[in-house]
Image: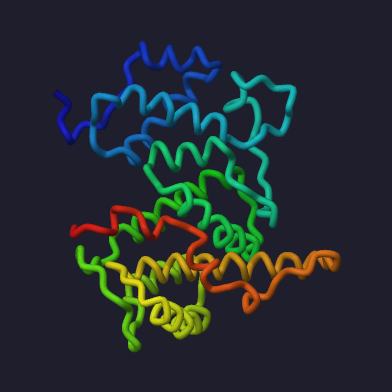
Length: 262
């Protein structure tokens, strides 16, 4: 049995199996450390997990500068091309598979993390060889913070007039690049809506994060349309969008993991 102090290593048979997908052996070995960092606990499916991990990363790798170079020679024959973030950027399909199936992150949560990720890197104006890799780390950190929110238990309660998001919830939104002014402005309308509906939830903090992320994405979308001067498309103001539509747009805040005591 492997000692927890010894990092897992693929055997030669597994490496050769992955090589059969036209992935260079040196590229495979370069992924071992990253894999061990992502998956700390050994399991019976470690071989399968590593195979899927390498395949997803290989498919998400940056496009080579010289398209005539074969994939087998890619790691040593060319340098990855760096590109700036764009308004239309989306994580690749393989990246989303890696995030949802390998890392176990809720797909709607990952989708809601895209706008904040895009606007953050557009504002910084830097170039990267692989935005997919940066997105994986971003959404992984966000999901970890979200899961570590203090929970109120199994009892669902109505929202109170003096409710405020906890410090941990505010920190999550700050890491999504929202400023305190934006966050604080959302609290009164959030309280008003849920007092009127008389609904009960075990964690109003998770519900508020869901609402804030949705409103932030809407604001970014409106800004993009304005910058592009698309006069033929008149976006609805956030005032015109029913709050119910905003609050119920995503389901990740209603996940069963938030309905039980830790």
